[in-house]
Length: 91
Image (cartoon, rainbow, N blue to C red; front, side, top):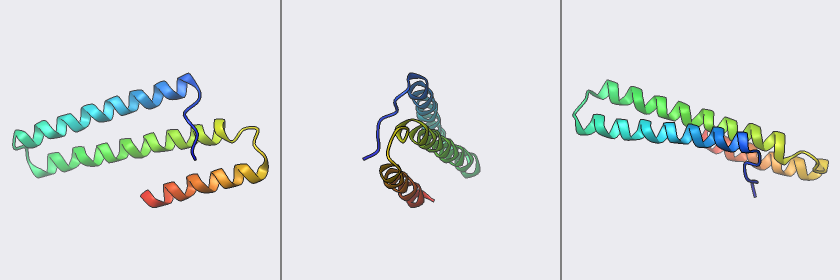
């Protein structure tokens, strides 16, 4: 199981990123409703995907920094392997 985002700063950073992404998604929906061109819509969708990737990286970094601290080498290796496995599924 992957642990929670522990530090308040990390949690706030992730929530801010997600709120921004949510706004981008609503904007793309408005673009589609307004019959904007495919290139403009696709550009925004790719920007959203990049923002999600950066958010995943921030969560992963926090996990490595906070959640593995103080663990035995065996537990840390298992948990880190799980994170790498999750990230590999999205690549």
